[in-house]
Image 1 (cartoon, rainbow, N blue to C red):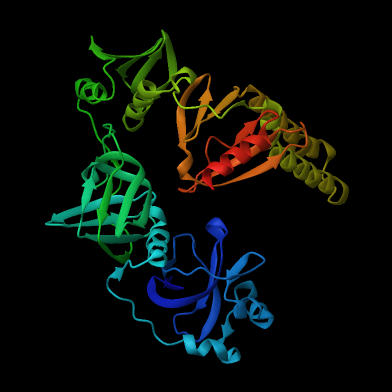
Image 2 (image 1 turned 90 degrees about the vertical axis):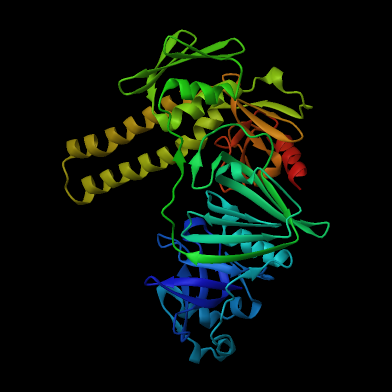
Length: 458
């Protein structure tokens, strides 16, 4: 495994001997710039500073670390690199054979599964990436991506057999790359429509952008471009109306008001002094929407799903357990309240702080936060989840604006409830790294639903 590492804004290349996956606290064990010492290096500090360009599946795991067996078993080495310290390679001679300078190629060629993993991991599956340049010539397509993860990646798709909708990408949320039938297939599985340069227009796109080609090469440049995702700006409600009309025929412009119909609901949008004002079924909403949010809100209204709209086979239809949902989030508030009250008690007993001050600042304050949290949790509306062979629908008040493709699930975990038998929380982790629907809480069917989803993603 080889990585480009930033040290004091200077780049160097080092083998990676072990790594620890822990989100923003992830680390690698690698050389320093002079290749004289080994040290534990944070992958984010706070910016990204480790870019693994040659991926390798380590065959050994010990505790939270995975790496080479002879590295993980070396107790003296791990003692030496504790607490941010460095280990001199003179004290660990086996590392000297790896200390030679590594010259990376200008272009990395994708030849097999390991190379696919290298590209997709260093780009983070192109999550939050913006195509800032797309060049087409004969049977080749070259795309430059600002990954927004502190690197710019350029990909050459050579010998292109087919391509669809590549020019209609504004920002990418997830993508996949695989080799099949002697060709490479790159698919953008989740994105906002738009155009190169990060222009997001939200005009609907039917299908997934993809490129099928014979050969792929890529290069990496550390840093960011000047581009960022930009919402298409509308000069008038009429332009807004034209784009929404492409989403649904149930859109009308009358007396400087946009009128949207979806089944039995009517949404009216008009311009106000502080943003767009919305009226839903005759009741004016308190929030005034800004331009970057109002189109997405209107599109979700026009494309929302009701349970009766689902045509696929329903594998499970479950409803949230409100007490369990409340406990899932209130437990952290309860822990804070107990610890904060304990601090007040210690100050009162050992620091001679007046009991009235401790009561107000610690005990009363903790009780207030706990009561407010419980009240807010129990005010949450009931949630409903419908699982089909391909999707999970999340319904709030019997209307769904949030749908997850089962193919985009990376892993799931089941947390059984101590409050209600057979109930539990299913936490769903997407390939893009985010959680779906704040977790899935099922009544009496948690284990059955968990096994059902796990079987579908296996």
